[in-house]
Length: 272
Image (cartoon, rainbow, N blue to C red; front, top):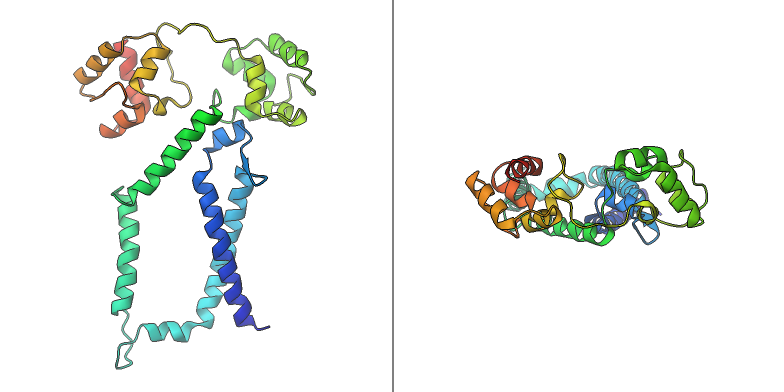
C-alpha cells in the first residue's frame, strides 16, 4: 500500500460516485415538490443526496489536489514541445482549453446544443410537478397546522376534525404537516388532501396573486381555471405586445419578452 496509489484510487472512486450523485440530482424534483411529496430514491431524500454530493465533491477536490502534486512532473511534461521546452499553449492544452470554454460559454449564454441539457432538466422537473403536485406555498410542510390553515384559508377546527376522523396521530395546531405525515407514514401532500375542501366549479376571475407552478401553466390552462375566454385573452396579450398562443406557458411568454412570469400575470389581471 502506497500513498500515491491510495490517492489515485480515492480520486477515481470519488469521481465515480460524484457522477452517480450528479445524475440523481439532475432528475430530482424541485425542493418544494420533493419535500411536499417525501420524494426519495434508493431510500435517500433530496437533502441526503445533496449532502452526499457536496461531501464527495470536497473529497474529490482534496484528492485531486494531492494527486496533482504527486504527479506534477508528468503534467509538466504534457506541456513541453518536441524539443522539451516548456510551452503552456501546446496543441493538447489548446484543445482542452477550447473544450472547456465551449461548455462554459455555451452554458452561460444558453446556446444549443448545451442548452438542451438544461431544457431537458426543466422538462423533468415539470413532469415531477405534474406527478407529485405542488404545495400551496413554498415549504408548506414545515408550517404548524394553525399557520398552514391561516395561509390557505382553511378552518383550523374543521381541519383537525378531518384528520382525527381519519385516525391520524399527533394532530395538534402546533405540529407541522411534515410531523403529522411522519407520525402516520404519509406524505405532507396526503395530509393536505385530507383537509383541503372538495373541488368546486371553476372560480370566476383571477386572484391578486398567482399560485405555485404558475410559470408552467399554459394560457389555455389559466383561462380554464378562472373561466376566462382564451381567445379574448390571447388577443389582449398580443395587443399588449406579448406574443402568445393557447399552448404557450407563462414562462415561455415571459422569457420571450424579457419579463418575469408574474409580470405576465399582472397583464392578464388587467385584461380579464
